[in-house]
Each structure stands twice: as C-alpha cells, then as structure tokens.
Length: 297
Image 1: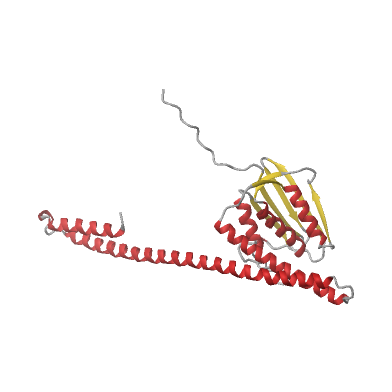
Image 2: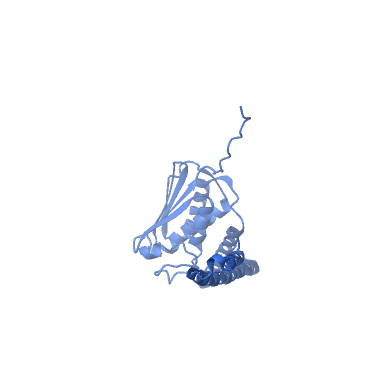
C-alpha cells in the first residue's frame, strides 16, 4: 500500500467515525482527528523525502556514468602520446654518443611515462570492476609471482628479493590480468616505500583450500590509524606526502581480491615496514545446486 493510499484510507475511516450517530459528542473523536492530521502531515513529508531520494539516486547514477565515460576518454587519449614519448626515449637511448646526464634524464622520462601508464591502467581496471565480474581461468600463481618479482627486482638494484615457498606450481582459478594488478601494486609499493633499500620478502603457502601470499618490506611503515584506512579509495598515509601516488592502487587491490572471494590485510609499524597478506581460494566456488526431486512415492 502506498503512502498516498494510506492517507486516503485513514481519512475515509475518520469520516465514517464522524458520520456514525453513536459517536456524536464523543471527545475522543476530536483527538483521533488531530492524530490523523499529524499522521497525514508525516506521510506527506515522507513522500517528499522519497521523491528527493529517488532524484538523488538518479543524479548519482548519471554522475557515475559520466565519470566513467570521462575516465575512459581521457585514458584512451593519453595512451597514444605516452607511447610516442616512450618510443622516442628508447630511440634516443640507442644513440652512441649521448652524455651520461642526458641518459639519466631519459631514464626519468621513461619512469614518468611508466607511472602514468600504470595510473591509466588502474583507472581502467577500476571502471572494469564496476561494470563486469572477473573472468576466471586456471593459471599458475607461482610462475606469475616469480616473473613479477624478477621484473620489479631488475629495476630495483638496492633491494633484495626473498622468495619463500616457490618450490612447486600453485594453480588457482582467477582472472590473471586483474590479479597481476594486485601483486604488481604490492611489489612496487614495497620498493617505493623502502627508499633506503632492504629486503622484500615474498612468501607463498597453501592450505585449507586457500593460498596465502605475503609481501613484506623493511620500509617506512604506517601508524595504526593510517593502516586502518590504507584500502580506502584515494587515501594516502600521513607519511607518504613526499612519494608519488594517487591512493588508488590498494583500493583496487582489495576490490579485485574481494571479487575473487578472497581477502587482503595489512600489518605495519612506523619505521619497521609493512606486511600485506592476500588470501585466495584454490578452488572455484560454485553455488550449490539442490538435487532434483524424484517422483513422490
């Protein structure tokens, strides 16, 4: 029953009471009328609130759609000039007589291009998570993490990468591309927030139907209040002001892990590093189908 029909029914009920000769002079009738008037006012206020709420939901959906379209447009428009800049930088690096100072500047240009490309990819991934589910397929997590650690380690000579539990394949169901975003972000953060170098520990273990991956560093760490918000969208820790970042990577990591039916957590202490723990199921979870009922006896 709608609020308008409730108001009409209440009005009709009061009218029947007033028309009944047995209620003539009944002092309670006036009180009922006052209560009905207040109730009617409340119902009208609720109707206004419901209309405002519907309008706000529609406007929010429109704004989210426009934001997605803008992100997609800007991301695609940026990709071409970034590719041109990166290609030109690579060509210049092949010149045999370039001064050392120029080579270092070219390296900075290429690093900046890679950061922009990663940011664009994460924006596109965020949009994809909002519009589609992960595409599961079985792949070897050990091989993926080994390759990613080698790639990040090659560009970070000041860090020691320690891989534990990587002695056998670990096949898991999941979207390999999306999970690559999770672990590339964790490994890159382990390096980025350990400016003085040190060990980056990557540990893999399997048990109880799940695989556990921990990425630990010896970097700057964060306090407890910041650690509780690290996975919030656009949040950056109070001691990360001097480090580049958009506060999107860990939010995406949690969204992707949640999409895969897993979980992610962090333990950290200022000055002593951070440890991120990801848990993922090793078997695809399928909703149980009730058995078909046979004919009644």
